[in-house]
Amino acid sequence: MKRYRFGIFLLILALVGISCTGYFKNSAIVPGEIWNDTDGNLINAHGGGMLFHDGKYYWYGEIKEGKTWLVPDQNWECYRVNAGGVSCYSSKNLQDWKYEGAALSPNLTDSANDLHISKVLERPKVIYNEKTKKFVMWLHVDTEDYLYSHAGVATSDKPEGPFAYLGSTLPNKYTSRDMTLFKDEDGKAYHIFASEMNAVMHISLLTDDYLQSSGVERRVFIDKNREAPAMFKNNGKYYLITSGCTGWDPNEASLASADSILGNWKEMYNPCMGEKGDKTFMAQSTYVLPIEGKTDYYIFMADRWNRTNLEDSRYVWLPLVFRNDSVLVEWKDSWKLLSQ
Ligand code: GAL
Image 1 (cartoon, rainbow, N blue to C red):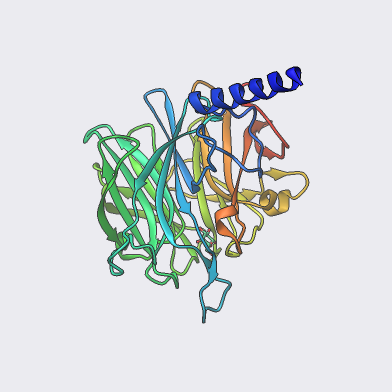
Image 2: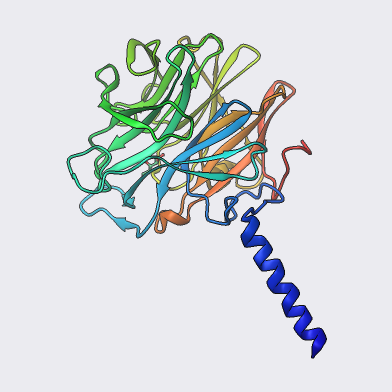
């Protein structure tokens, strides 16, 4: 009996210990599983993007919370949740993520506001502007029928926010849905967005403050219906991974490359190898992150959407490597950054 009581005492001590330190660590990156932050809560950052700043990675993503419903009278399966704003998490090792709070909060009261919970807020991306010292966020802002198709812009003095919303535009007078940002080595930044009812991808140079479209842009993948763009650069060459257009359902990814970002883009092949590689491992691209201090090594980041329960959508992160001049993403049940 005494031993039993001592056992319970030790268990309570351990539990109190965990809640006092309040720090949960993940032992590996496990694609498609439930991922928790360092407080032990579910990570809620979908369609996300990354920023590396002052030795830390920041992960921004869509907050998807609450009931999923089907928007009536649409000619496609338009499942939605309330727009929950944009979350921010920080990490030094890309494995243990501290919740930094809502970087961009939704609007709860004004149904005409772009950020109202009845709207669609997707694929937020953040870059840092060295000249203005501002963190600049762009995101897809839409109505529930996806016909508003605007790009929203917000800024903050700190990476974790809160970001102040500046408003939304039709970049270069074009509609804008799935999107990403890419900041080049020369400090120029680009907004890459699915436009013209998703038929054409646009690569648009931003103004020096990153707050507007400059008017200089290139239309690529004309009539190819690509979305979910994720751009990266290696050895002076530009790469763009995109998905096909099948709503929340997975499809085959495609890799394209170009010698100059506003030049000719050549579609090449599907970089996802092995089982379910033809369905992007049941996920959809959102970002490709270069790992600081390593060459030729990136993380391919994708969302495994659960269309009828969107808040239970998961993250599929896998190493993206260059092998014999080919770009490859291979499935791993579980992996660690350092063992690569
Ligand atoms: C996908 C898109 C997602 C979301 C979804 C809505 O094709 O990549 O970001 O917009 O459609 O069904």
